[in-house]
Length: 627
Image 1 (cartoon, rainbow, N blue to C red):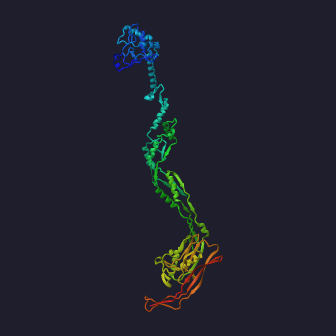
Image 2: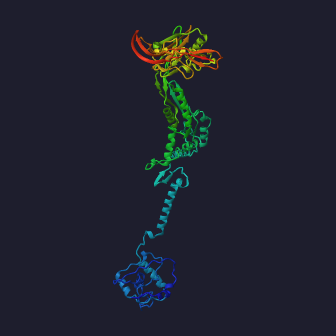
Image 3: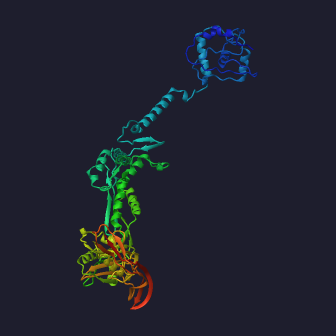
């Protein structure tokens, strides 16, 4: 079996020019029964057709040229463009005979004669398969190309609206969208253009409101001018009323400063209808259709956006406090306004119901409404009412004089003047339950500026003249009326010695500012003090609710001890006196210890007696001063 050497590449037969510079079809190789390659089919055919004695690459002497000897025989006479169907077929027997004679060397560069060439061509055509087929005809290719161009032209014409934006008048217009062929509809396209133009407006879509003001059809700048301009100034950002009883208070931006973020809410208003949601995923609704549906719905139902705003909470707190102060009041009992002593006519004031509003609760309700920027809201507050303990009707039906006491005065004009001034100072005093009356506080310091004059008074066991002298008779008279009205005595002191205008143990002395007479109203109803001077008589009355049906109180005093003064006289030198003169400064006075009792009577019969207090009057030795 021949082998291939590198020197075979230099064989001149390999470099003979070919008639056509095209890729040559591979020759058909035939295997023999031993599995070895035989001659190419074309050489085998030529050998069979060659005349006897003619030159043939498979006849005569074996060639020494490796190109035609050995395992590989090259067919230089085959055309480069010969189709596979034109290559003649042969059987295995001819292949074996050709293989046996393949050792003859091929002719070296021998040109075929004209006759032999014609004979060869004729033989090859005769040996080719009959009918090369329709697909070998060039008309088939022309037809196929024409058909493709026609199909392409059809597609271009049909898709012209989508590709070039050109629409046919007399034929349908189509588009290829998402794997589907869609037919162009003029009415739908017209509606789409209108919808697209509507959506492409650079304004806030109609149907959008901001704080109740319609801003649809406006640009953001125009809407901002409306919201912060005169139109907005005429409308309140909020309006919350508070109704308590027959009064109403209003909280709005006229009395509560407020600001709002108009710019941000206008951006939100402009975005309405310009965004999409995930609700259309998996549906046939396109993003365009979703936006269009949203915008169209605005024209029917609309949407209102509220601007974020802030208001002055401290101002709200101040206004709430003002409301609370105006509404809240304690209950006030009816009281005696005046008494006509001569006719005993009584005039009473009206009672007043107490009203209380919880300020903190009201503040929470108001701020909750303001946080929601409500308009026209009215918060109705039911205050807590507290009824007074004493009404005018009760006073009219039950108010009466509980007790009265009268003492006789002297002929001393200065003293009677002082008594009258003191009565005027304490009369018409209303003492509410739990309140304490002070004689010194009611009359004040007795001074000449107030009209008081010098009169006899007791001081340090001596009788002296001082401004306001004699007013102890007013305090003692009042004490007797207070005791008989069963009011609580807080502070009371007896005189240095017994006085003549009241019984022993039933007096009450006063002296500015350390010695005072005080009592407290221990009743559940108010009491009214009446004091007056008339016809050298000093009277005191206590008016109020009665002690009980036909119940009265009186005082009974009893001397339980008598203290005798020393019998001798005490002399005291006074260098301020004129030489050789003397004067009795302290009279000899007997001392007493007196128990006083409070006695209750009902229908004139004693029903109760209790010790009230004990009074001690010290004994005084007669004293004479001299020089």
